[in-house]
Length: 376
Length: 243
Image (tube, rainbow over all chains, first blue to last red; front, top):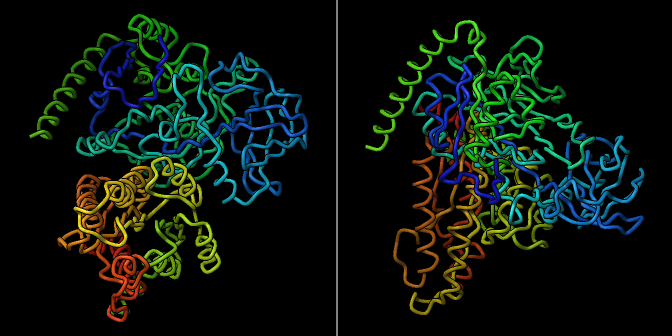
């Protein structure tokens, strides 16, 4: 794979690698991703807008330059103010790969960080020299004003240019809660949503505060994802409960939220919660049938999550195919559609395979007809 | 005035989050007051910090954000603050307007730069802000709460008044934009209104027609009531009642 170096959300040549329920791999232009969906399917996306969560400034006690990357919400009602867990770097910026960034000066509770118009106070250390709890003791309006003026979207060294906030917002971005773009949602545009409507594919959103995906530090990365807040609207829970077809998650954050909200009895509950679970090979998925996501390197927490959908040998073949066909990776890269393994696929692969191929062919013909109707 | 319709409208806006651009003077200022009196959560946008502070004193509980909607780079920081306030947005009122050259002059005497400012404020600004907030507005529509955009228009968008070239052409573009948004967003449940408040006794009108007979002009508060009723009538549950 090669990094996607430009901040283009929907490049005309974006590609899609499809892993079907029987472990077969196909390639397609990403713009055609709806052709793998069927009438009655329910698509769920994360509509969190992305915060400008990278704050440059000065560690007051030492005068050392620092960058604080807000990484997770830790409540806004606490007496000490609006509180986050944050990853703190020393001098430098996103142009230096995170693993080569110098550490911050030794940080201690009570330390003040001057971050442009914002002042944060360190509450506690969190078991790693870079991970701290920070709070902003100021009125909410002043905090957001300062963040809007001074914060920049978190970004990494594979990109060529600094990101603008609009680069990091998906078209459906609503409540600003995410610390990194829920970038699987870049596949969505309004035309696609209208097309879904025309094809009888339902659409709903949840809001999940996607945390940082990497810190550049192995020990710290092993702790990711941190606990993440999410909200599921009543209508989304109803749509999932009443689905006639499959549940298609746009992004790993949607998988984490839906599966967390259904952990008791398989029924997705609406409301505000904190997702704490890790999803991997051991996870029995109770809600999500398929996932649209970026292309992830083996070893990342995103890749680990894919193991809940597909067996290791299938994922190895998928990774090989991504490498061989030079798919682009990272947030502005190409995408994968991973359909959850059919439990019968091992026992009876040939029969189910034939049925599935016929069904896919029908679905593809049906959608081609729809497209023709739409352009008349 | 139909008091019954008005009282239904009163309840309809309760608890909704509504943003008004150009909220410190004229129609925008009157809308902030009207919408707040109907128990909506009102955020307003304006360029001048002192005037924002004054409106905040007069309308406690509102949110005032300093931004120029004509500035491309100001739109997302503005949208961030708007959406963070109550966790979303139900209604957007694109009210901030620029008159073009002051005093008004014929097109032949209009500086290109003055026309550009009118287009940036009256057309591109509302386009960019609507686009940045469309995710939240569509989410509000899906929830059956809101999803309404009101673009403030003018009879100068329709009639060819001499001297009103920059303003009239830009408002005509905005009105057309509203109509196209409206057809394209119908399936999303987001509704677009383009309304002309008529000639009002506002600072903008005074700039355009300094010697106007102010007693012949409409009070902005009247237009604000009418607009608030129109927003209430466009809300999802009201739209269902009409079916």
